[in-house]
Length: 173
View 1: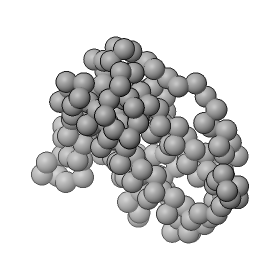
View 2 (view 1 turned 180 degrees about the vertical axis):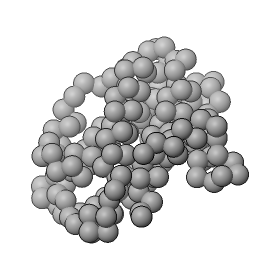
View 3 (view 1 turned 60 degrees about the vertical axis):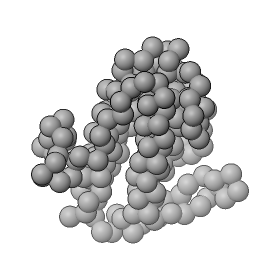
């Protein structure tokens, strides 16, 4: 058994929890300038979603490559939340049942300077999970700036302090 399914479910729960905190924002507040690497919550959350699509496409070997970035920015919280949830489900399905052989195979990513860069599945997944955590941390700061208390996103794995909202993610197969 590998931990990647659980990491994908943690990711899905973290995104759902973050979007629940964002749900009270109207479009003006979601797109308002905020401190951070990206200039607004909408830019941060769209970036997370777009990069997820990019790497999920590579993992599934669907062949879309960088064209996943050729989409309009979504400025509506419920719409972006639904799109992110779909991507999270795709990632969790991909991670369910991964074998050691699956983890060591390579997939191709389309980079600007290396259109056929090969990456091992296990390293690409770890990079993707780290990317998501990194940018959700930035969204925390932006939420605070918007006057919203950022939610706890680290109460998922341990039995002792698992958030009640995380329990359904542990019972899914």
